[in-house]
Image (tube, rainbow, N blue to C red; front, top):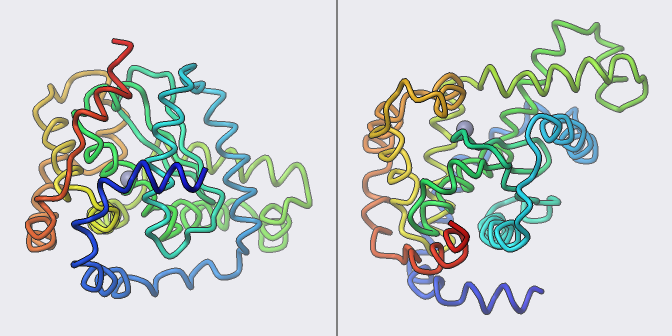
Length: 275
Ligand SMILES: [Zn+2]
C-alpha cells in the first residue's frame, strides 16, 4: 500500500524538494498553538471524533463509490503525511450530499460532500480543500470549541467524565454538542488560519498552491442564494474575504508554488468518470 502511494504520488513530488526547507520553517512558526487542550489526550481526541463522525454520518451517508472514496483517501493521506501529526488515524470520506461543504472531525476524520467534489477541476483543488480541513485537526479547532462549549454546559467533574467516556449521559451531551457545532461553525480566526496552513500543506505535498484559492473563486462565482451553499456560507467567512486574507498573508508562498502540478487529468479520470 505504502509503495503504491509513493508510486502514485511520485509524479507530484519533484518540484517540492528544493523548497522543502522554507516550507518547514513556515509550518514551525505556527506550531505552538496546541497547548490549550493538553488536558485532552490523543486517545480521547480520537474517540470523541469517532462518536461525532458517526453522528454526522447519520445525517448524510458516505457515497457508494469505492473508487472515489479510495482516491480521496489517497490524496488526503498523502497530505496528512506532510504534517506534524502524520500518525493520527486519518480517514477521508465523500458524503452523498448535493450541498457544497467539507468538515473536519477531531482525531483525523475528514468529510467532503459530493456536491463540492463535483465542482472541482483538479487534484490540486481537492488537495487544497482537504488540507484546509486537515489544518483544523492539526490545530484542534473543533476539539477546543467542543471543550469550551461543553465547559459551560457541564460542570467540571462531569466534563472530565464526558471527555473520558466514563458516563453515558454526559457523554451523550458532549457528542450532541460536538455535532451541532457543524451547523454553527468555528471562529473566523480558525477558518482563516486553516486557509493559510492548508495552502502550506498542499504546497508541501507538491501541488499547485492555488488549489484552495481556485475553489474559493468557484464558490464566490456561484449565486450566494443557492441553497446548496447555505450551510457552507453560514459556517465560513465569505469566499471573497477568505481570498483577500490569503492574498495579504500568503501571496509569496502562493506564487512560489504556483507552478507545481494541478493534476487535472487524473482528477477528472478518478472523479468525473461516472458523470
Ligand atoms: Zn474550515
